[in-house]
Image (cartoon, rainbow, N blue to C red; front, side, top):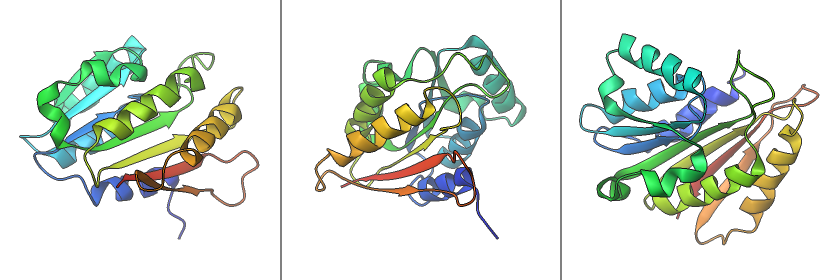
Length: 188
């Protein structure tokens, strides 16, 4: 049985994210990762959730409210390139995970996409913010205009990082013409 990239990403994060930890959802979208992260951090943990679209934040908030987990999340209606300036200093030593899903809001405006110009700075900030041993996932959807370029930029940026700082690998699903890519990153 093939495991989806989103499930692989969650498994990678789950191995390091525990109750009381902090986590970043860099691209809230429909809130699936936000819900997953909030369920992992427990009552004393927090998720810092970013999106530029009000409809993404509103929909995700409803999802988390229905699950009884909304109080575990700090919501930011701003781009992921603002991670470092937004996350309280008191949480920085407790950040163990960050998740990125690049592309556009499913069911939303397909012209509003993530772009390398903001994604690369956000990724650099996430690597800086997560604690040693912390993990980051990036799913880059390549089937829309700008998607392949952004995925290539992420891979190129990762390839320039020192091996003593991060470990990463790329996962490509088989049998798709323009497959999404999963990047698994661990801070050393």
